[in-house]
Amino acid sequence: MFRPGWKMTAFTVLFAPLLFWLGNWQLAREQEKILLQQEYEAKQAADPLPVASVDWSQAGLGFTGVF
Image 1: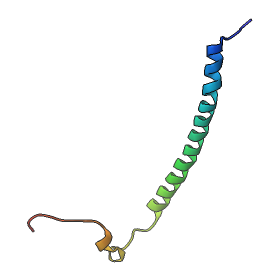
Image 2: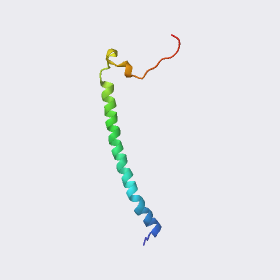
Image 3: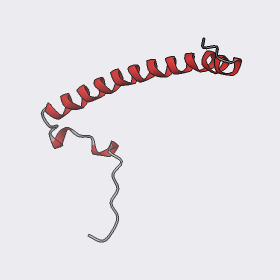
Image 4: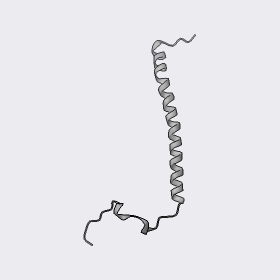
């Protein structure tokens, strides 16, 4: 007859909820990644913005050098 010691029982009692929580976290993360991928694909399929419609003062670009 199998009789686990108190150490193995304590280990199981302490880590089973943690592993269950981590599994649920991975499933939620999967859903977030699916939504992110769908958003990326929708943006890739969208028409490009015309250059004139972009507010370049907010773009954060800087140029240095000799022109």
